[in-house]
Length: 58
Image (cartoon, rainbow, N blue to C red; front, side):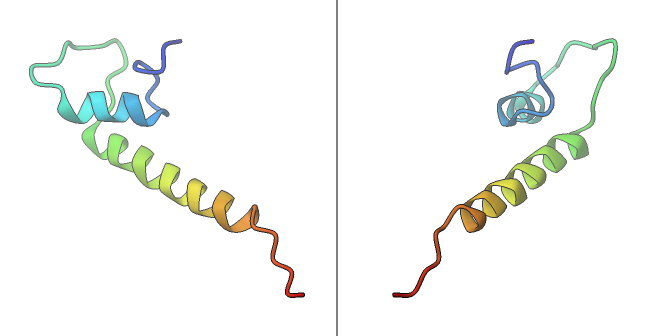
């Protein structure tokens, strides 16, 4: 599956939000779903950034 067609990828969400006169799909997703993808990616990125830091005071 292409990243631009994958609704769980930020590129797919961006394409959904910027689509003007988009083609009807067999399983359409909403604008709210696209914003949810951005929110989940932001939370996941923040978690990875915090969890990956080696916090040792020496």
